[in-house]
Length: 497
Image: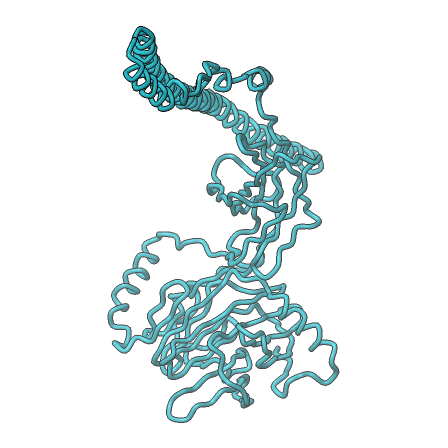
């Protein structure tokens, strides 16, 4: 009976998964159908716009060429009119001189005849009829302004749709996820010299496998990528995965998207647990600040939350690194006395994790580290055998030290602007780094026997956290190097039971 129930449960689970897969595919088909309808209308509109632009160019060219012909016509007409006027005047003068010469032949007086002959000779010498050119200055040929459209006509007749670029192929093996950056590498299935650029789209998700149409964040777009790879930097890895897809574009059209690729982008994401914080601390998600009012402004707010919790309203869900992790918040006392402390809201039970802390410049005293959940409400970080920290004191006399079990190790180095915290739960290692230069500040080596919570103490100042960070590559290399050296255990190393 039990075996049959288990078999039936597996069948139901398989069927449910298949139904979800089919529903996701139906959503994809409906989304694609809407896209076809919308995109076809857009393409027709763009085609009309292209042809209207072509007609406008032809009309503009026709007008320009027509003006050129009219200008040439006016120029030639003016030249011929001028030449015609000159010839008419020359002919009129020549006919007048010819008539005068004919009359002179009838003169009987030798002296008058000689005088007339000299006048005729002088006038003939100066006559315009003998100086003008009897060749037209311009021709009536206008064929040099004719256009042969045969080649253009052939080109227009050969006009056809520009081939749509094929979908690129993302190479998951070449893609790299490191240091909160993702490098995506792709290639074309075949060479295409008409490609102008690529478009990369990405989005965060907590689902493995193919992207889902519904219940997801919108795709973010990076346009005009000229190469076949791109690096996204400065990311916060606050989701388990990221989806990526890319398509090629030529001058006129974008091709189909590549098959989407899902890459794992897990990192430790946590906020500060306001329910654990000292009343002299003002806590907002990833920022904690000393409150000189003594927390009086928060007391009513906190009491209201506690009363609300007692009325039966369930508290919000808390995430943890392991599914086995119990609820962390709401089950411990608030820090009090001189323990100006607040813990993170997410337990670390396994794996390697990294986060960073930046202190205000005027912060008088602060500690950064980890602690077990059972850290006493009067306890300070580093003063018990259940907490480890690095402590900075700028009050009266500056000190910089690593602390554990009420023992301190002075650190002879400059306090960095940002402190990076590396926790290897399984390897029993807690290291602190200069977050900018990745210089190692100090390392605790121990055996963690309970889930760890990030811990922070602050007095007269504030701390800002950066979570969702991968372990930096430089830190990984330093850890390998440090672990390879014998006798590298610190003086505060211990095994805590």
